[in-house]
Length: 320
Ligand SMILES: C[S@@+](CC[C@H](N)C(=O)[O-])C[C@H]1O[C@@H](n2cnc3c(N)ncnc32)[C@H](O)[C@@H]1O
Image (tube, rainbow, N blue to C red; front, side, top):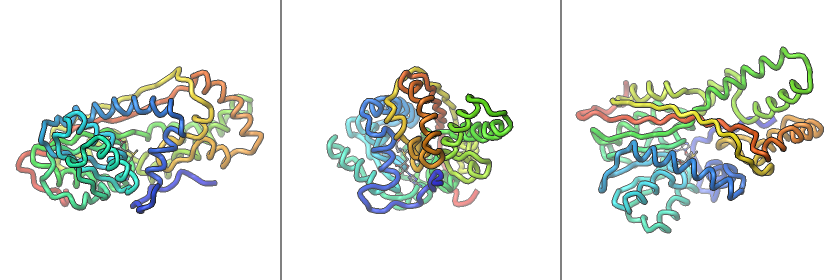
């Protein structure tokens, strides 16, 4: 059975890679209505991250793991191009997307594009950024302390950090606990359906203690983020955890089936195919489909926003 795939370490120069495939395709499964809903949520996160960065015209902003440019291009739009924005990512296809979008918007002269992992930020000199942002990128970085130290390195003294990261550990731990509970329940139609759903979910997200600890997306909590940036030398750290349960939004069944929850994760369709026989797949679809189409499925979003400051007179933290 194919399990949640590994986080790739570096991107190639292909037209598409795992990151671009998810961001541009499987995040919304090609459903433009669903893509518009996602975009609305993303815009809210973008605005919050940018507010935390406290930008003013002529500042230099470094956006790490910029993807197709949500935060970086949002900043340029907010300031009508009167910023210098360094757009970084490991994915060449996504840097290409961001570059094409910057050109469409007429911001190409305000942007620099650098293909680099967050763990090294190669090509960005020390003490050069007034602000550094990242959204849903640090979560995928295996060596988060190395990345936090790089954020510290490239920021000027009194430069601001503003980030927004998804927190998956609770959901993964809950899935692990449910698995144990289901083992001990007697068979019944409801328990059997719960077991089918659980088998599919465990193919999508890490769901054993070992997997949760191994996967960069699930092996940290919002409190670990606070400790991480404190360790890297930041001060005035402020973290807010937002948990939103969204209920009542009907979704097309094919969209629900083919979207994937995060880069590298199986879609429900792939998870069902990998874990259930034909009869079980039909049983689960009969149970889930009416709920999905009538908006009775609750989605849970758990996101940490963190801002911090690099102190004036700061020394670089190559080591703690
Ligand atoms: C979920 S997307 C978020 C993209 C963008 N920040 C946004 O808000 O739409 C995750 C991004 O992190 C990038 N990424 C993954 N691992 C990375 C790493 N080690 N260093 C830098 N970027 C990374 C991916 O290429 C992808 O663009």
